[in-house]
Image 1: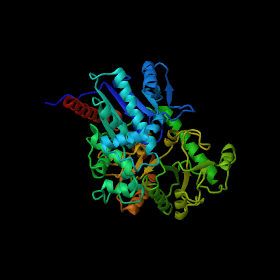
Image 2: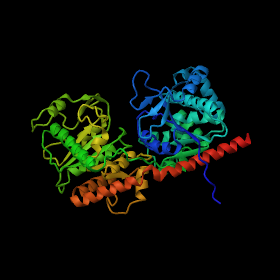
Image 3: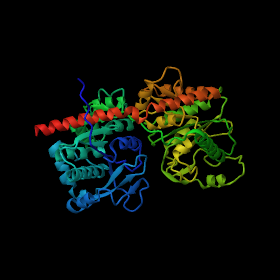
Image 4: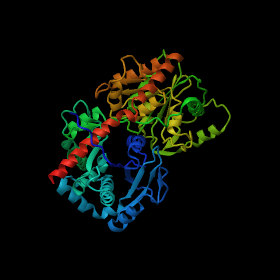
Length: 554
């Protein structure tokens, strides 16, 4: 007989990215929040760092009414500084923003406590380890305080910690409030990301790497220690993809209890005539900036291709994308103009004033600006990896070049000084996206691209790529996504495959492209949270049952 799954009455989730848009974890939390709210109705609480002491956080709407009595009690009796409000996202979930500064005074005692109870090695801490740990410890204290003030042993409660930065919160609660079921989710192991980022072959030798040894070699002992100990000691250890689960098995010596596949919601995607209008506006904006920068008039039919994400040159596959564009530019059979964008935030100094002046003008320009391949000046122009590779490849954006490449090294937040549009308002103007990642536990950027009906190229080293591989047939772009096989040693093959796939896409008829775009949206629909929430309920059940067993033993 199948047991009915235990469901929590209350859920707490802690992450450095609650009301703090940094990367993919923000997308995981913010898009899933509405689904949780519909089920738990203000009994799900997100906990994030209070980093906006002197300025307004646009993602947080503070409330003076929510849990006012507990907040006053926590401040007066436990010296906990908390701001309570709602996250300005669909579902508007309740948020606790925690000021953790006061815990620095107890840092040594906290670290000693973590060593004595859980063998967490904080001796080699540096960089952001202290900041993350003090936040995590404060999160644990906040949840404990709320539990003792509002809840009791009859309430089923789970606490989910995201990434090593909040692992200490889960460990603290295991000792302080054993009735709470603890879940730890690693979205990418700290040591795996470090191995890949240090140009070491991660996948060919994954079976042979010892996580502890590599942590010592790469000076990652403390982050690796809190991550590994939390993975082993929480009630339910989870990760986000099959490929990251293998990484956890080898580097943390612990397979995931549940793989929490990342979903998303498409409520931010325009519909109907609004979509068509915004797509047209996006294409005009992209072509306009390119024409002003290049001093040319590109065809309205130019194929617009782009990549985006964090500036991790190898891990995100920026290198192979540029290499592929160089090959494509040398392809004599290419009979369609290709306009490629690299939307990756760099060390921006300022938007180009000469480009801004041209954008204000109604003139048509036939002379390119100086450096006609970048929209913003950088502080480190001579050391920038994208610019160095463009020079090495001989990509100069000459009038006779069929492929033009433009580097947009800023956050597309609507106020960058050149486009002045949000990222999504430009994404839907693309014809094709390319995310040939080397290290990518999941990969929201290709999934978002599909949601906007922009077909995408990715690799099977991305969690999303592996998931998509199981959906599609073998023919190119059968389902709006092309997944390229990537290993530690097939760089040139990946480059050739990207160039060939872009060239093939450029030859598609308008009717064929419409069918591909429709398929792309259909793939994205299969990744909506409603299809993946069952994994979370499995994790909740495991955590609650183990917490109950712990309570019975005690």
